[in-house]
Image (cartoon, rainbow, N blue to C red; front, side):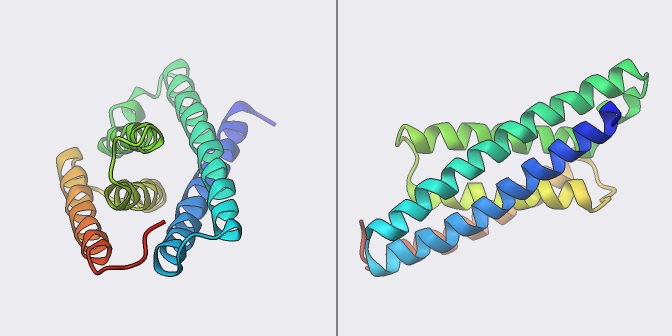
Length: 163
């Protein structure tokens, strides 16, 4: 197996774990918020967050691997691509969001909105060969975060049970 295939496999697995984990985290978090905390849902959330972290680690390592491989093979046009820079920015936001949620410096509704939007944005930008500039991609991404966060915040204000 060559390096390109190994890095690609790591990137795909990292993305699948991250997007899948974020999706299930949303499902379990919504259930816990609606029905109240219970040990089963809490256990599922704990496992889901661990899977998301593994996905993030794989994504960062493989993304760095892609950048190194492109540099060593002289394909620097990929390094300067707007899509690559947008994905790097979104990955950085996922990392910061994860840290802020972990140390409880981010409201859960906002961190949750950033997480789910960021994972899906990275997936869509990576899989769909969008031809747009960096600022267009980032602006669209920020607009979606605002919409998702507004929805989640309105749900959190509706008097649902809190853990």
